[in-house]
Length: 210
Image (cartoon, rainbow, N blue to C red; front, side, top):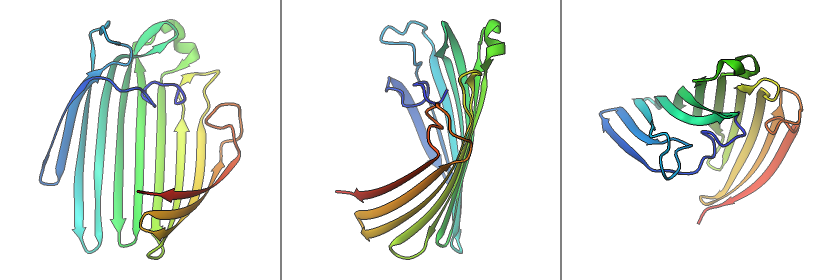
């Protein structure tokens, strides 16, 4: 459930991280406390993760990267009164060619250790997809288009899938000052769920960096 604080907007906790880069390959691994451990570490379990990134290109205006993520949460979330495991894995890519940047990411979630009595009412898988393109139209103007899709998990009666298409134009008055206009449109249909409680959202912003 993307609107709950499980692997999303979570508070920080103690962990160990090791990463290094050899040539064009970067590998990162580590462990951290589970969400429900608290200061006494009640469940005495840790959450390991592994990430890797490969850079490519660099000639003829073409470059990019390919990344992967694997995260295992031991009893890191709670469904009703049951602590459950959480497997998250994903892939992302970035390709740059001259004035065009393309981005994409796919994330899969799988809930484990779910009680059998909850299975008929609970979807233990979820999928998220993001695709974005940025084009530098001039030295001061950036045009962007983005598509987001969520195939939600969680309690079947409460979950809501989402599809969102966004257009944005950003104008840089100076290096540290920009104006932007963004229009996001809900393709899935309006509902009371926080991820779909609007039809169209238009925002004007002024960004100033000090």
